[in-house]
Image 1 (cartoon, rainbow, N blue to C red):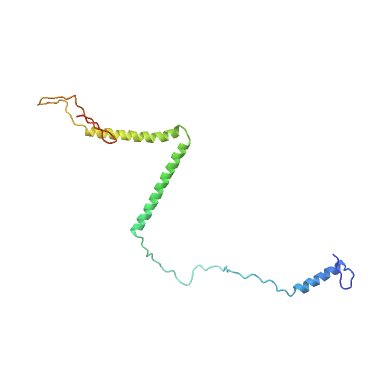
Image 2 (cartoon, rainbow, N blue to C red; image 1 turned 120 degrees about the horizontal axis):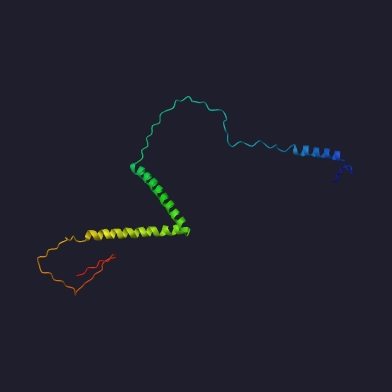
Length: 165
């Protein structure tokens, strides 16, 4: 750039640098200097004494927990643990079902077969307890009449019972 003072001739590099320095000193000297930021917090770095002038005072525990609140807390913990176990078991079963293998098929069919066997066992036990007790030798004191032409059958309920009369 070409700087020309009032005399009209161009300034040398040294004169231009000296003039720039003068302008900067005079123009920016009256500007307010930036102040240090005001701290918004204070941290006291002095070490704390090991004990203070006041002796410690015993503060006894005066709160009481009602029995229902303690019972609810214990029940909540138990239910949470139980649900976690059920969730883990369900996850394991569903992981087994996701893979179509012999193990997954057995995981589905074995509980159903176990329920069917249990129902059969209970039904058989009930039938044997309801059966009449007979002796090996039957002694009849009256004439015996046998009716074979009339048969009546009634089925009741899910597990039907047939009665012949």
